[in-house]
Every structure is written in C-alpha cells, then in structure tokens.
Length: 493
Image 1 (tube, helix red, strand yellow):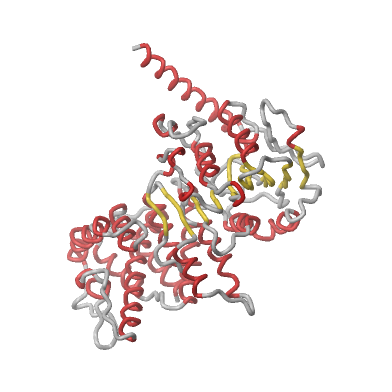
Image 2 (image 1 turned 90 degrees about the horizontal axis):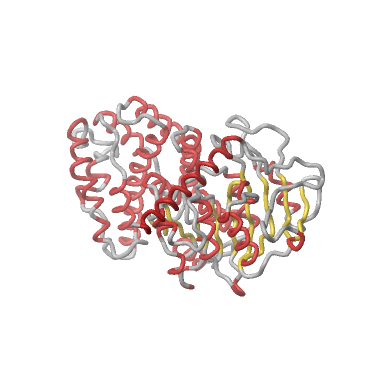
C-alpha cells in the first residue's frame, strides 16, 4: 500500500509545473511527510497523556495541525472535502500562513536539539514548489494514507524513502552527493563496530545514510532471537548517540526526515557549514567516539574558511579530514574513524596532501585502506578509498584490500553486500590474499608519505589519475596560485 502511495505522489508531482526533477520530488515529499509524521507523533503523545490522566500540550496551534488544514475528517473517518482546503485557497494558506508560522518556531525553541527548532529550521530552508493547489490536494490525500504508528510501518516507509534518495542520487544535478552506496556504508559500520554509549558523528551528513545504518546496527539485538535493549539503551540511542552537521538545505531536510523514519524522533543534526568552525575551538566536550563520513570532494573553500585549518587548502575533503581527526576522542579513548576520500589523496604531491598524510599517519593508526573500484559511486567517475583509523597512536602498518567484484558496476549493476563479504572476513585478521597485503610504514618515503595502492600480488595499480582528475588538480593549483598572488599584491599595497 505504501509503495503505491509513493508512486501516486510522484505521478502527481511529475504533472506539476513547479517540480522538474527527482530532487524536487524528494524535497516536496519530505516536507509533507514530516508534517504527517508530526501529526502522528502528537496524536500518540496526546493519547499517552490522556491514559496517564494528564493534559498534552500540542506543539502546533490548532489551525496549523494536519487534521485541521490538510485532512479534516468526517464522522466516517474519511477526509471531509467540504472543509479541506484545495486549489488557490490551499496554495495561499500553505505559502502565506503555514510556512511562515512553522518557520517562526526557530526563534521560539529552547535549543537546537528540540523538535521545535527542527520545525523552524526545515520550514525556513525549503519552499513549497507545488504550483497547482489541486495537485497539492491530491498529494496530501495520498500522504494521508500513510501511517507512522508501528515500527513495521516506519520500517517500510524508511525503505521507500531510501529508494527515493537513491533515485535522486542517480538523477544528476548534484543528486549523487547525497547518496553513498548502502552496502559500502554497512561494511564501514561493521568494521568500526560501534557500541551503545559511544557517540557517532558525521560532519558532512548528506542524507544521513551513515547515521541511519549505524542506528540499524545498534538496534540489531532487538531483531536477534533472545537479544534485547534496555529502556536506558533506547533512550541513549534516541538522544545521545547520533550527531551530524549539514551545510545544504535540501540535504538537511532529507537527513532529518530519513532519521525520523528510521525511528529517531528529534535528530541531533545541525544546519551549518562544518568547515566554518575553527579547529582550535574544538574542545574535549565536543569530541566523539566514532566518525563515519563521505565528505564532498573537489569543492573549493574560500580563503577565510581555509584560515580555520593548520593545513590550508581549497580541497574540501582535505579540510574535512583535518576536522575529523581533531574531533575524534584521543588518548586512551581511541576514537575510531572510517572516511571515504578520493584515491588521489594517497599520492598527490602538493604540500597540503603530503602534510595531511603525515598528520594522519603520525597522530592516528591508519590500519586499513579499502580501495574501491570505479563505478562504486553512481554518476561519479572518480575512484575512491576508505580510510579506517584510530586516533592516539601512530601508524606502524597499513593493511590494504583491493575490492574487485569482477564486473563493471553501474546503475543496473551496483555494489552489493556480497561484494564486500571477503573484505569483511579478511579484515578481522588482516590476512594477505590476492586482493590484500600489508605495508610497513617504516619502509615508505618519509618525505612524500606516499600511500599509493600497489598490489604486490599482481593486482591492478590504481593510483593513475584520469585526464579529468589531472586537469582538475592543475586548475586547483592555478586557482591557489592566483589566490597567493592576490594576497601578495594586497600586502604590497
């Protein structure tokens, strides 16, 4: 039933002049789903309060509740279309009253981790793009069919929403930056092996795929025969485990909705530019046990943002890696990280790349490099590696694994869980094989700290860059040189 409702919603959005891509479909479905979810949450809490003989204080004022403007019901439990707004009246209400009212919650909220703040943030960042009030009426009727009451319903909805995010990732127009293949995320989570009580952080949260998969991993004992979590464990998972930051409005909204559908009521996701934070301002209380992330690469950060980092570079991913190293707990706690990065990070000869490799190897134990084949990320031609590291002790040896599913991967043949089975088995003992080997850091060149993937067992060497990657690096170098020249001109007056 839910699958058909999602299809019906997309069919109506396709007809509307204001929605032109999968990104629009996901964004518009998200805000409506959020308000329907909020209504279900409030109804449940009101029922709980009544059973306890208490009065529930609603978050939303009566005219702005789903049951008042979107889906007023008759005595038969069906939508009363005489009272339900439609056409121009509906668009005027949504754009002129509902969105401004919901946005105002941001200033009323007691703090950024409250659901009130999330409401204000979401409705200050996105707009209703549905132009026809009749199309919007039809979509609302389909959304109203969805139920969030049971875990089974939430699970089915979260699965459908993940599919929507994946489709958006395949659709172009930068959609791919929101989607990391879930089999790869699941493998990263399993290697890092989070425990209840540890905090998990993604400073480039995107659609929150890493946090959702980590949540599922930690909730697994409930699904396992004989396994159970205490009430305290469940509260810890809800309130004090998952943290993220996201710069882009659409990704922020999707992340919030994705985590809610997975079962986290008020996700600790902040809408901010992570890289705008000065590294020297990060204190012990800000640190986390685990970092799981796929930061954007190829970006170009402004000079004032670069000032926040000891190793200054325009490459976004290099700045994020510095942030992740800094924000992990160190010392005896030994914070753990698993981060996706372009494979050229291992061998680039520019000062920033060399300095960053040195920092990583000297301040962390980089114990695994997983080399991913081309086509792992749909719509992105770049090759990537996953760095697994523990903060607090320097690297002595690195175990490499060259993932090779034995086929060309693409939209119709994507990465799957079976492709990572051997990696997950071998990483436990870090055994050598045709696809895996160990490098002693004492034996590498300590002037370049080159970590190139060179399989001694006859596998493909993958450090060669494509022409587009070489051009990109030259362009980046030219831009950085131009910035330096501008700075010198400024100093010379």
